[in-house]
Length: 76
Image (cartoon, rainbow, N blue to C red; front, top):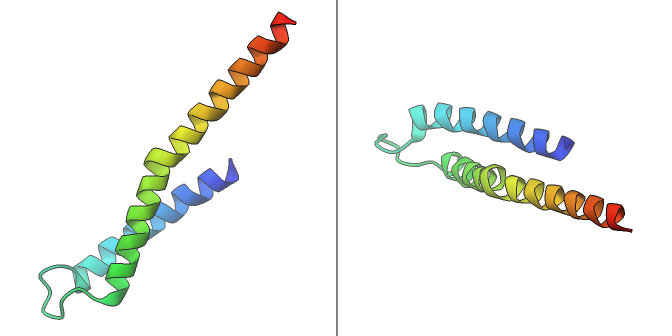
């Protein structure tokens, strides 16, 4: 559970940082897209997939396994 909370907080911080970086060095700036902007973008996308796809999948798996074990315990 702590890992999930850490990932969500890290995602929120990096999302905020991406907003700050995009104001300075994002698309349409004179300097172009900087390396920091690109790295933070890749991290945000990776964390977004983790938070929105992987974590709910793991939660559903754990819940299903708990329910199956509970059902198996009551049958015997």
